Amino acid sequence: MSYGTLAIARRGAVAVIALTSADGMNCYTPEMGEDLVAALRAAAADEDVAAIVLTGSGRAFCAGAHRDVLTGALGPSGLRIGQEAFIASFAPEFAAIPKLTIAAFNGSAAGIGVTMSLLCDLRLAVPGARLRLNFAELGIMPGLGSTRTLARLVGPARAKTLLLCSQTLTSEEAAAIGLVDEVLPADALQDRALALGKAAASASRALAAEIKAAVDASGEGDLATALRREADAAQRLRGA
Image 1 (cartoon, rainbow, N blue to C red):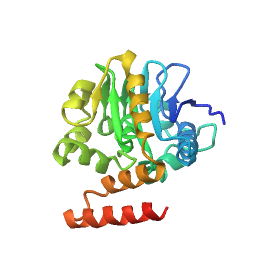
Image 2 (cartoon, one colour; image 1 turned 30 degrees about the vertical axis):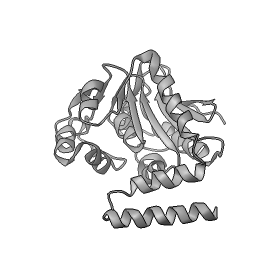
Image 3 (cartoon, rainbow, N blue to C red; image 1 turned 90 degrees about the vertical axis):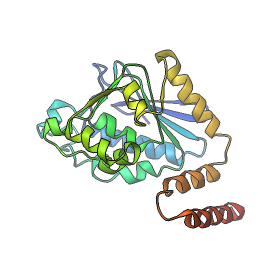
Image 4 (cartoon, rainbow, N blue to C red; image 1 turned 180 degrees about the horizontal axis):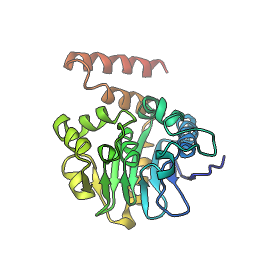
């Protein structure tokens, strides 16, 4: 299937989804959101795919929402921003994809370009990439559940500072607070993302799904709860 706002590639067991636009800034539109939902669902359902890499093509990862849609303009799909499934309802499904998901910041990101990455399991970035959470500056509410996902990564106090003060971080600064997991040279970014994805393929799809779900639920309950969760997962795997 072809997408107007995405370039899709397969690298062995890794699906690579690249945001794309003519100017290389990959600004978000409702049409991109619809394409992302379809492409992510297709990759999640593909048994031959062990990991998904989300990246950008061109100069940026995603320079935020397109200025036209921020004014409330209708896109070609007839949707205004926020009406499309990606923003309205898809975040829990994205976060729960039973495969390793990796955001690879090939360049800078702003607004939704940052918050969509928070739904991935890992975030890699090139040196000097600028990550800007400019929702307060724009006068709009952060979305995609980012008030939760950001706070879980960097803590509530720092999340409030980033969101309320429209702060911009370099990839190195983001790595220092846990917002980015690794900073890599530009020519090594995709290779590292693919290597991680291929390593994840060593586990069965069922085991990978159970491990990811258990880690995602690690904030719920105590150690005994985690033990029961692991035992239940082991039982399901034995019966698979």
